[in-house]
Amino acid sequence: MMEKTQEEQQSSPQMAAPDGGWGWVVVGSLFMSSALVFGLIRSLGVFFVEFVQYFGESAQAVSWIASIGLAMQQLMSPIGAAASNVYGTRPVVMMGGFLSGLGFILASQATSLVHLYLTMGLISGLGWALVFTPTVASVMQYFTVRRSLAMGLGFTGVGLASFAFSPLFQYLVEVYAWRGALLVLGGLSFNMIACGALIRPLGKPKVVLKTENLTKLNKCSSLLSRIFESFELSLLSHRGFLTYAVAITFFNAGYFIPYIHLVAHSRHIGFTEYQAAFVISVTGVVDIMGRVASGWFSDLGKIRMPHMLVVWTGLLGLSLMIIPVAVVYSGLIVISVVYGFCAGAMTPLAFAVVPEIVGIGRVLGALGLLQLIESVGGLLGAPLSGWLKDCTGTYTLSFIAAGSFLVLGMLVTMTLPYFWSCTAPPPPSPSKRMSQDGSIEDGLLKQTLSSNSVPESLCPLDDTPYSDKELKVCWKSDVTCPVQERDEIPQEMMHHTNSGEIL
Image (cartoon, rainbow, N blue to C red; front, top):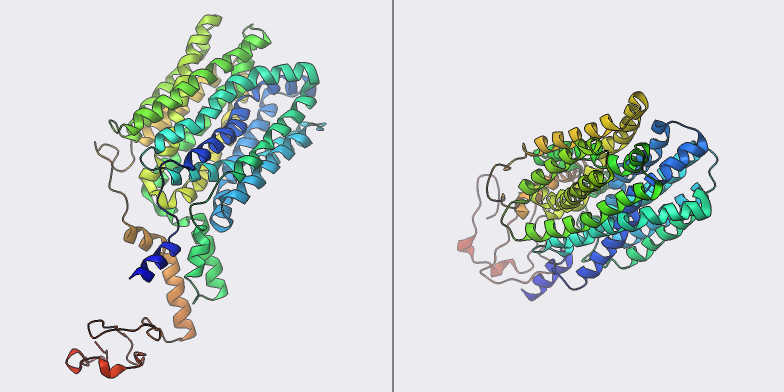
């Protein structure tokens, strides 16, 4: 019994979530990584004006830089999740930190927008994909009871970076021009390599464990099984997951538009460069407060997380729609405070609700697939906003469209299974989850064994001593139970059925 317990512990995908300990170091890693990914993306609006003036291109064309980077971060997230399932989180995140810094360093030498698309968009975006999703999944795996609070604290890095980066980047542009500023951003991004080194895995990578147990599959079916397991493709038939994927795609289409165009909108209506940068800084401060408050209140368990997510998303959409109304600086600051708090409160819930939908065992693959699907919204949202500005001459319709996307996402979220229930749905049982995840693998196993005509032995007893009370069952009539001392089994406990089975 003791040997069996130790064997089960070694073969388990991960240990129980410690809800503390080294988990807080992983939260610190998420803090820095989120600051250097989304905090940086939020502050790229400072470079937006510089790129428009330097390259002489339209707002729509320049908007594609941030959109490509954001879309790559989300489009390639399944690659980051799959690589983490195979190789572990630590090396994947460290490689992502290197690529994100490399992209900004190469962008500092750009001579056209196409160069910026390839460097800041493709290379840095790929690096962000390898960093963000595995780090978020690591925090979720380390916490159960205080998961929302841990997520909220980890994501405060986005708000703090939004507060600090916008005026910092404006200063760097004035002192070193935009090329020198991008070099500094590349150096900052390399810090994510150290963040990845801090992530301590709770167990072996999922696919490594699965492969160790699939020794009977041939090479072809083993490869298909690894791909299926790495990318968690069974989620594509999960109704709750697909519904939430549509909702979060709408969220993504509108969420980042203010961070790309709010600085340009502020300067367009007559405010100075530093006044416009300060608007983003204010949203960053209250963003921190919103994240911590939302995570703390969610862990109290008074209101279900999907319900809280709907409330904050609706308020966020409404606040975006009324931004064009504020033509006085004080009014713009007030609306930005409301917007920043709602945006901060929404973000940790958007991720923390995923385990409730799919279960913690599939959260890494779910986050990767979610960001792949939502990349459509991230890719089209900002260029659509820039196109509306080019057509109308103002950003009014741009912010109305952004708010509308968030409201649509809120309505889709309300169609989730069990949404209207006052209590959270029961978590999927391990047996049910294994049967869902392994359905294709089981089919591959059966097809492989049947095609090769290999006798199936379900009871390897060569090394298993047993007493009179322990019976092993062989299901095939042409398979003899390999019991060395068969006479030890009482004769009255054995009989033959019509099908030849030995029971």
